[in-house]
Image 1 (tube, rainbow, N blue to C red):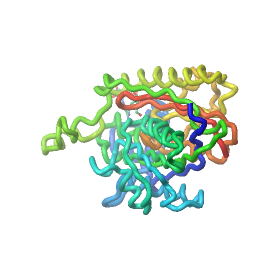
Image 2 (spheres, helix red, strand yellow):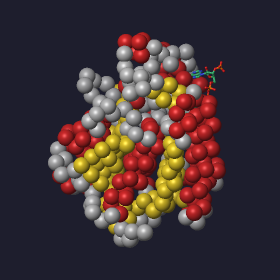
Image 3 (spheres, rainbow, N blue to C red):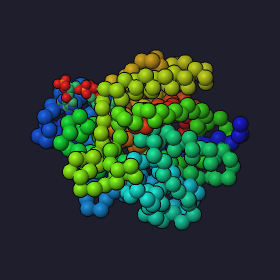
Length: 329
Ligand code: UT7
């Protein structure tokens, strides 16, 4: 094992100013504020509006804020990894566009597509570059403009998702802080329950695919819900067990924000109380790759050196996992 570890030395987020509330959605589809709140936990979502604005614009704002906080310039970044399922384009990578928008000339970059687990997959990947000793500053950003792939006539998906971005800076340390362990899993079998039917190489976009609304998110909610409850709880319990962490040792569970009921089930399985669970789904909805860094951003002021965090996610793919992070202020 490398003696160098990757520690999170900064976090920042960005959500666009426009809000979509449950009351707005009541006017758009056959739903109620009560159904949405009790079945999902969501109350409002932020939506990126404006001609020509995409995922990279939100990510660039998050990264610019992160650099300003740290007193760094864009040229101090060695590598930028962007986790997203709503890239600006199929290619080039959104990471490259973010680097261009912030003026990062020394960084290489690429995207990771692991849906709602994208941020934790990218965090672990970015950490490995630090652990080799070769790279000193890696930015990992999770960003999604979910509104670009949501059908706002489909009540089963449009109430859940929102837009947003969060970014963290990873730097090396020889102390026992940072990304200490991870359990990452994939099972492509689950793809049938949550995917975008058209627009990829299997079914390129055509008039027909657009007419059939196949460029939007398709989700069969119940099977995803069941798999998420088991998957997220399993990996969270596993990472605690193999790091000898009891519920008392855990400062916070930092869960992907897909559904409050999934979060509650994970917390119950870990034995941690509600006061130790980061929840902001009511404000942002499910921002896919953005949820976990947005939680860290919202809780940043409360986090103390030595806090043990369990980051956990489940999403399309299926992909899921948990990461053990020891915080350094
Ligand atoms: O982040 C990526 C991974 N995704 C997830 O983790 C999401 C997992 N799934 C879920 O969170 C839940 O399955 C949903 C929130 C998507 C749906 O909740 P549910 O409790 O599983 O509802 P359901 O799909 O079983 O539907 C129950 C009823 C249905 O009506 P009938 O057939 O019983 O008459 C739906 O048509 O609720 C209806 N329904 C709605 N009613 C009012 C579905 N969406 C809505 C809605 N408003 N927005």
